[in-house]
Length: 249
Ligand code: FPP
Image (cartoon, helix red, strand yellow):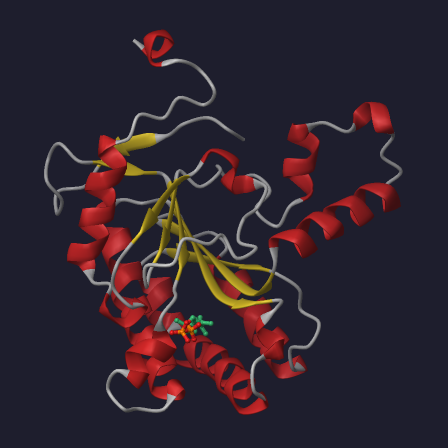
């Protein structure tokens, strides 16, 4: 879906600020944050989770309706075994410790990504978090865990073939319906922390017309103020969706 979408922010933001309906978040820089403090990388990921909690709350307060986070990519399996184990452990911890609070705040949890490679116990926790929160409506939180944009497209094509979709039936709308994010608006804004200008296989299809914002701080330091800066920047952009400026007035 390529429909642009913004709405006025809730009372906690400047009155004139329009917030995007859907934000994507590439939470980069945990390792560098830890290194800059002479801490192990695991401490950076732990601080990253703590920050995630704050940013989800801020998004709920601001009235953002969809938030997609990139927590573990299909490529992250190539990291040192201990780091991978640590990230898998953090997912378990988040599901064990944060679920009730997220549920209370009206967050609907969805998993985007493959379940292969996840322990059975983790899969069950994910499934029950998704089931428990499925009727919540304040914020849809897409948790990208074992997620890759290319893998998602491959998965969609395989599913379409398995369903006997013919070439005449293939359209952008149909492909949308086979993605993990089926039924959700495309991200209006994708924020990447730690200053890098890379897409890193995140929401490749859905991000076709997203505005990108590179925050110059490591993820654990990306606070509500930084989020508001990203939103102000987003508000200053002219989204043309292939048209000219003159056509938009
Ligand atoms: C990138 O920083 C961050 C990640 C690969 C993981 C992001 C994960 C979290 C914030 C916590 C996990 C969240 C859940 C829901 C379990 P990096 O390690 O690439 O940092 P660097 O580029 O500075 O080394």
